[in-house]
Length: 509
Image 1 (spheres, helix red, strand yellow):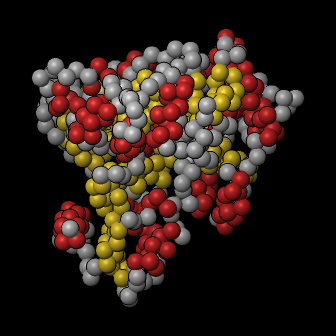
Image 2 (cartoon, one colour; image 1 turned 180 degrees about the vertical axis):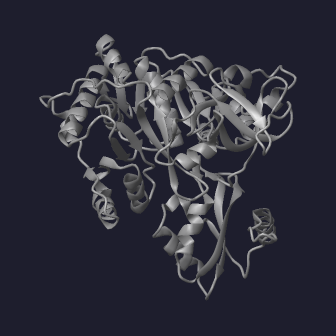
């Protein structure tokens, strides 16, 4: 089916129900939401977009983000939401790889993005205006027929090669993860609120799906991002409010809540995930904010839905293993199978440590235009997550490490290889190795060890890095070294680099 049928039905049943709000103001009801999506679909068709074509969203959060996305689906096309923090060159590569027909872009970046597309010879059209959406007399396209196995969301996530890979999600996957939310996290009633302080382009954006299906209210903050005081104020204003928050966001929420005269009001559920949550932090969050927390562990390749630590478990302080469970990522969700495997792919007994593997219809259809990477990631029907963990006898999953050396800073995935390759484009940089350093505010920050051919300053390295990748990926700290520690095969020993970095911090202290 066409996933946009959910919006059409909500508009049919509850046309006057508030659908999208911008801050404390209703931006549109469900009838208007569906009309704006249908106008977007007609406009896209007029630009030559056909069912199955890719349409890119290179935008920060805004109230028109969701009508654009649902308009893409209404037209039978594939939405390609892209991290708005990316450098224009990085976004242009995604447009090229995904063969995007049209890209919606913020007006301030339109010229730079268009230039980046020209430089690599991509003919993707760029649209900065969405005025057609608000023209009440603009034509509307009928809902296009699609099947469960037609792609609807192309989610770009980096891999070990340093280049992004496009995770193909079909209507089947989005429907399953939506139903899993109802079954594992909470029910959604008409008028319940989902706040969007996290980027709609990321996994957090999928949390709006249950609210469209059941005619809830999706709220975009006026800051178009995460401000903890604003998020708490919006929850108090709209009531029955939920949102997704990375652990670093939870930390900032706790700090903000401490300044209030009473506990935050209007909250339903704060779903945390996207990075490691320290036990002390979640215990403090429960004390300061209250009984509103649930955890989800998933990946772009299996969105939202590998394991869940529901509110009932988070609050079950009388259980003898409560703190142990609170430190886990919960139990396996109903719609997936999980097993722990050794390097050969054999299943390990309960309690042993190995790679987390997942089988479910929720697992991606594959990587876009990359059958080799797909075959490597999905073996005999099982997704190899690249994460290391263990299952206990009660079915609770503990996430112990990330085998792909990914750095998670502020809830955003940063892949060391991307930063290393960016720095290595400088002619005077001989070798680079990037690691993550634990950080109380951001979870992790990026640290680069750099071997230079000639004398280079940190400022020169930083400026070069910023010319190649997005600002949030740049190293927060640089170590200029004579050589990198390596094993007999020439592989850099990142464990030794982490030790050296820790020693450096101790020396500074």
